[in-house]
Amino acid sequence: MIPQRFEYSAPKTLDEALGLLAEGAKPLAGGMSLIPMMKLRLAAPEHLVDLGRIKDLSYIREQGGSIHIGATATHHDVESSALLRGKCPLLAETASHIGDVQVRNMGTIGGSVAHADPSADYPAALQALEAKLVLKGVKSERTVSAEEFFVDTFTTALEPGEIVREVIVPVDGDGTGTSYQKVLQPASGFAIVGIAARVRKSGEKITLVRIGVTGLANRAFRATAAEKSLEGKTGSAAEVQAAAAVVAQGVEANSDLHASADYRKHLAVVYAVKALNAALSRIA
Image (cartoon, rainbow, N blue to C red; front, top):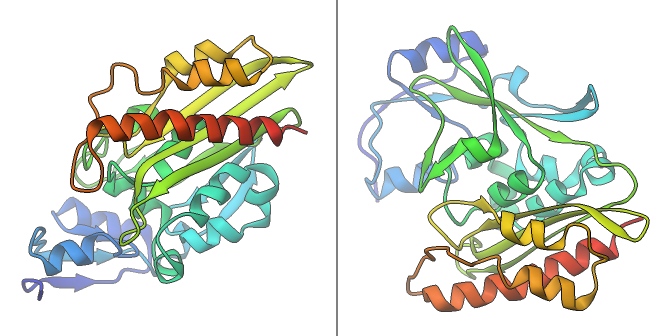
């Protein structure tokens, strides 16, 4: 349970950190995923670059009709942010489901999404929010959608030397309700299945549905068939059930000691109903 020897740097500027990363060093944010992997020797970086002292990466602010969240904002920052609770409650609610108090105090949103654990909570919410991620390298900066970013198990669109600089989420106005519901693995707090729902109504009709799913497959994804099934409807119990029934349709579900593939599919349907009903109930 002791990591291999490594060099450690704690730069105070983003440019300095990116320069080190371009030379092959690995980034360290909260360390909630990387440090345990290093202790088990599943990861053995020769050089770690601690991003925690870079003030330019820690913020939550509204800009141009969206909310911008710096990569080193902690889960506690996201959970407790008055701005997010008021204007993007889905992300704050999702953060409150992560791990335990100690993990939420240390873990960061940028580190979590870059790790891309297939049972992590944020990826479902970011898919439902149609969030964007700003990826920064020494000589480049680009913006990708959450849907593009999560490629496979522990695999993202990040190129060597790049980091997640910030996450951008929308400000939803009146007429939109959201919810995140999950079955957690008690020891780790990760989602056996997690469903993020975002629903918008105009009058009695549903005009937008976004459903993010985590824990079910090799990566988080949007349940587009379920979304289309509910759009244009009123959101009756029968309509919600019908939409939820196709959330896991055609998905190659994960199977492990915590839950079989069939049980995960069953949970996805049950918790999609819960998330959709909760989101509908929160529409102001």
